[in-house]
Length: 90
Ligand code: SF4
Image 1 (tube, rainbow, N blue to C red):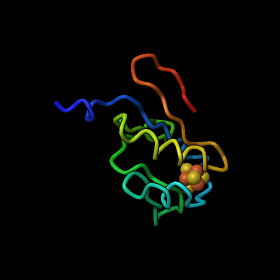
Image 2: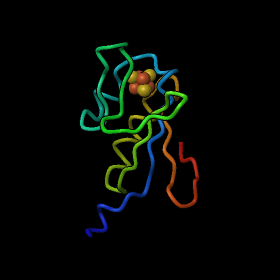
Image 3: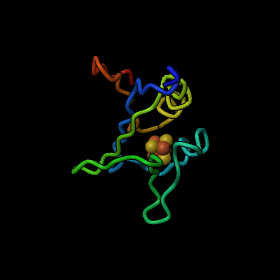
Image 4: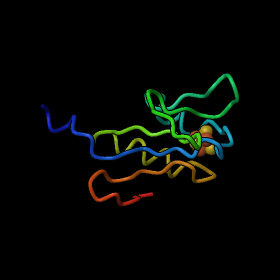
């Protein structure tokens, strides 16, 4: 396996508190899209928790673009967790 493909981080999206500003989907449309159902964003290909959060494991190579999304989110509902240590980077 290519080391670039190893999953190093997990996106955690507090979707219930997303205000649908579209910033994440504009920055990283391969990871984020706006839902036509309720106007909030979705992490493409993610799994859902009981609380309505979305989770997706990503590789090191995809960290920066999703970090840019997290930093741009006006309500701080995008989190990045280091797999292994469990450290919340943002
Ligand atoms: S940047 Fe934050 S508030 Fe805006 S759509 Fe994305 S997750 Fe929702």
